[in-house]
Length: 121
Image (cartoon, rainbow, N blue to C red; front, side, top):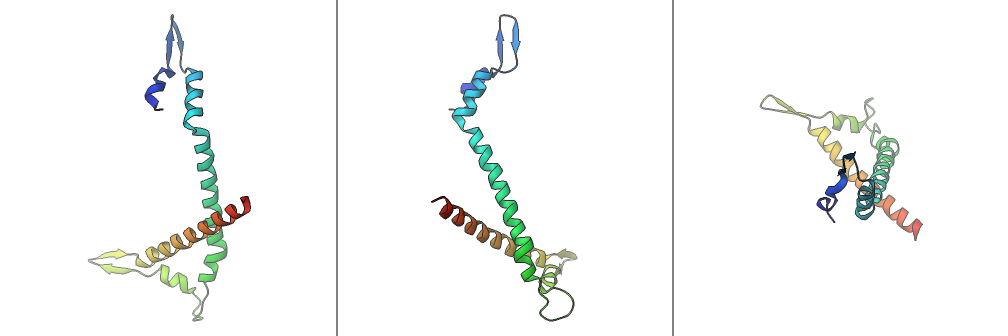
């Protein structure tokens, strides 16, 4: 099915004007599984929020340990590292931290997916 089959959303019959053909719209929503997709997107968004919260509140504090006792977390020193190249400041440290964060969140998502799959089965 494609949208072209549902081009009769608008109806003009015998001088009456109906903005939407509700039956055709309902048929399109049911056959295309739009509600299921919307539920999947909502669940995915909230799982992402939980995973990011897990990273920011549980994993990241482990990286902010001050091992050299200089008063600054060692991870913060890495995050603030930058290079000047041709009078352009490149925030290499922030990129490295975001890269590490991406892989940790990806790993946490895999663990959560595995846990939920085992819970369901």
